[in-house]
Image (cartoon, rainbow, N blue to C red):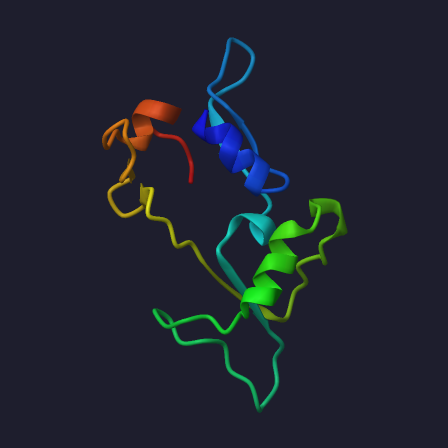
Length: 118
């Protein structure tokens, strides 16, 4: 299935369509699940990236971060600013729909149920 492919490429991804004991869900560690992640340490010389702009993460940094097992990732700490982005040709997060897939463009509500927290 498509989710098995995504799970293979996203360490730490957990998902379920639900059953009588578990609600439908899709969860993943932020550090391995996002397409770009930049940490900006507070200083007078460095500002976080501009909103809507490109994040200055190199391809090598991204590949290393996404290949790391979740338990080996650095912890998120208070103080730094963490900027992240999702770039997906298969999800339209603004309209909460699947896009560009042979299954059509179903609402994510039809996959995970309405009213699920994001």
